[in-house]
Length: 529
Ligand code: TNX
Image (tube, rainbow, N blue to C red):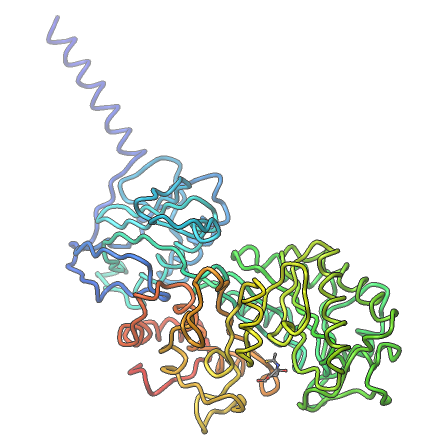
């Protein structure tokens, strides 16, 4: 009797455990774990802290992603990113398995992250642990997980280690603890000199997200074009948007399309900062509404590349009424804390008018609940609100801003301008500030470049891409890549981790991925592609 009871009991256990196995199969890897080293860990930008595990995690088609209902967007980004790289989509599973990727929202230990006080940096932190069996990605926020997913995807090699019919990919085991050095890691695109379509802009935003950019500054207005529909001011798009450098048709975004771009970027944890450049660089607005004109000449449409000839009239209340409405419309559709007011190269605005204008416009930005950013000239004005100075050209101006307590966004043209040619042979670009080969783009320290700034005043690094010479994704990508990856590392990675030799070797192994994505990058001879 006892024996019968025991065997029924044992059969029961066997049934339970076999059904458990069905629910929770333990996939068997088609290949043995491989030995790996630091050289197999290639992430752009370089993480804060990396510990090599020495072994490997083998990706094959039984890989699963553990469902986390709060992480639908990140899960989709992970699954589709993996599918692009390995050719199959891992299954989403409900219960823990022994061969899975898990995304977890949890507070990260201070011990791991040091004692940084900047919440914005902590929000982007993540910890990635890859063991032979599982991958665990932890962060305190959705944004942190998104940044970590980019690192994980870059660890998937472009070549599979093919086993019979089965494609397998070898990832190094490791532990990474990562967070950014700078709060703003930005790229700017000038859509005014040449218009870029919604799809072209999305393509660039998507590329920037891979390298952990979190800000996309759009230069939306200039002498050659006004690029966003404005309610109440139809001529801005009927007349002001119909031109571009070289005489092409130009174009503009409807407010719905602009919102679509904002949302597309936000899904990738990138914030769009809109720029209305003024009081100079305003010919397109002035030909649309000549009452705004302050240079005394009859306005005509402009499709050349000179700068500094146009200005709003700083002594006309109609100009401020116009700007109140325009800035209000931007404040209403743009979730960013910032509105960029330009302020550069206003060569035909009298100095006293310039100062008055910048002070009035900054107050309007503040009235609409936003913080003004301006090119370094704006520090000539006595701005009373919080505002940010963007260094592009005049270091003295920028330092005046810092003395006035303004945080600084670094974009020195000689180092960080994506529209500068690489060398004399570059197909696109300008050279008024410098030739910027890849090593020049990478090998400098933004924090000490022009003055020993207290790191707490540096808000971030931005790489602007002016579009006098570029007009489509291919020409854009030629100037942006690979330099945008260099700037991503300078802005994200800790200064101690800047390393040109390592950067070169990481970029070399990354080249096939750039190719696979059809990015028209410049094949710098400094890299042994
Ligand atoms: C200077 S940078 C400008 C732009 C040009 C750029 C070309 C800045 C604030 N102003 O208007 O497009 O040079 O490199």
